[in-house]
Length: 101
Figure 1 (cartoon, one colour):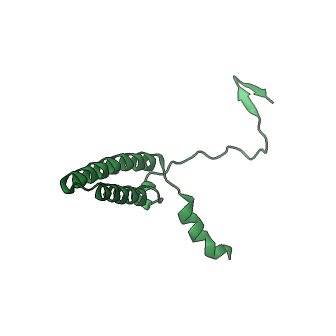
Figure 2 (cartoon, rainbow, N blue to C red):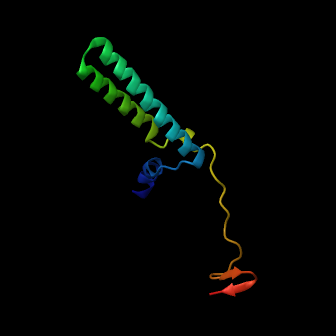
Figure 3 (cartoon, rainbow, N blue to C red):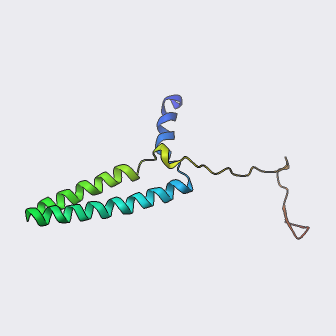
């Protein structure tokens, strides 16, 4: 059962890198501003508040669809983290050449 759920868990886990976080924030801001402006003008032209609200809701849902899932283009620049050095279980902390417990 774990083999069947592993791809789903990887898809939902949400691995994005720092550049992807910046891109998601930028897309969120731009898409919400555009959808707000479009919904305002649509409501102003047709003089219908319900149309304004529904078009604003549609823009917000579209923005959520673009930003919330961990799409692959949000993880194009993954960070290479440093591994641990040495095979010791507890090497301690060294400050100015003195080992600290």
